[in-house]
Length: 387
Image (cartoon, rainbow, N blue to C red):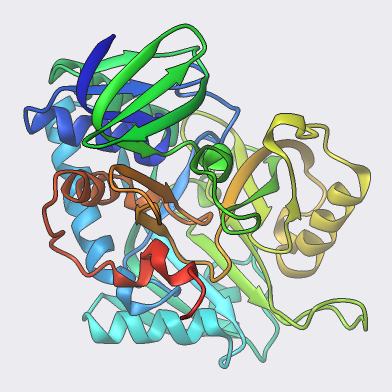
């Protein structure tokens, strides 16, 4: 039976970055995945992800975002790959919306270059967008786009260069923990390590053996608009735009803001990504319906017609991916409750921009090093019953 310092189950966003970081530190590392990453069965595909530092989910994330930007640039130098491209990032909504308030608090607290815009100013600069007059926007001037598939491949290439063993197309069935070690039982082989990280996305809750609805898989439909060759919609000209709008007036609908986004067209493809960020449906990743339903298509068309009318009428294709949400919407990072050697991670649908620093934090935790940033907000212990 092969023995390692660390085993990483799942080599997507967090797992691939952690494999690379641990291997570069000289540890004996095994990464294992039920598929062959980068792949389309989890959460890390889809051509583009936004990167911002004025973080609307709360100022606790900003030091991580700043560090992550630095690590993305360092990885580009190490690998020779172009992974992050600058573009503006708009946060749009009513002045009292959590998104706008969170953006402004983060930008002001950390002196991040930004602008405050009225709805009229947004419409003038980007006529494809049509926020109501009662909306405002915050523009982060130097945000960006990262390319997820290329990034995952780069993390794993760098991990192998540093000596990591990577096993693909093999499903982990279970693990057992004993004094001082963990044994991982996969479909064809068994492995042993001092520490285990479960970073398997929508399969993480089951592999960790956590209570139901602690880490919740969600089905996410992503839509692609086939836009004409318009330079004003391309990366570098058109900003990422994230919207938080009041709910539709329905007594059955929960009174929360609807969240959706649009990302600029990449050089490699004449398509613009548009999707909802919340209001998602629970799912079982093993029986996930990957066919996009007619009402899902009509709902996104309605949002485009109302808020992005300059994009109305273009042909739409759609795809399905997965989020793994926590009850409070924050990350899950750390040691599994009741275990001495087993750790878990879930990124709650907004983690790819943090991938390099997540890898750094998890490598620290696995090696009993205190991370350089405060991660108390993400502790798995917050979900334990109060005594």
